[in-house]
Image (tube, rainbow, N blue to C red; front, side, top):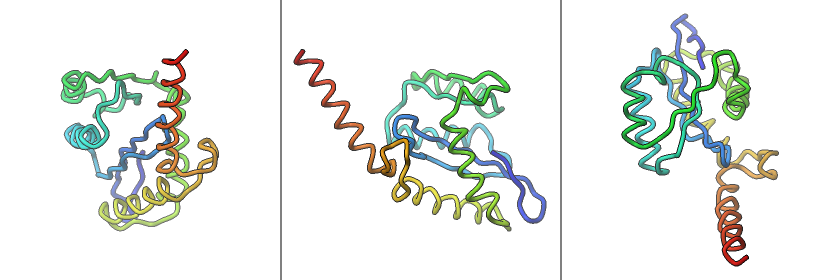
Length: 162
């Protein structure tokens, strides 16, 4: 996503969500985020959550960079690029981005990148830990994940016992 500070300088956000439980894993703010920032962010997420099988994303310059593609190959992660002009192929992040845009970039006048990051970090905590999500049965993503794991484990046990 992109927006503008009060003084006219542009900034972008890198928003990462987990499609399984709709948890927002990261929002990184920078004027012009290089591929190295994307890689650092993804490395941190892989260290924390483990490597995903795949990442669905648009065709932005950082995401199609040689360095990022090599990083994903080293990690064994498949990169699934959506077709240009087809945001519906990445509907979860598009929905998330709409909510974030309405509640953060459109709601504030920012003086600095640091201010955007601080407000985004606070918003991320509220979104993940306190905000009920209709698609998750009215619970926040942090509360839904244990249910997802329990349900998956129960389904696995049921399949094994069949």
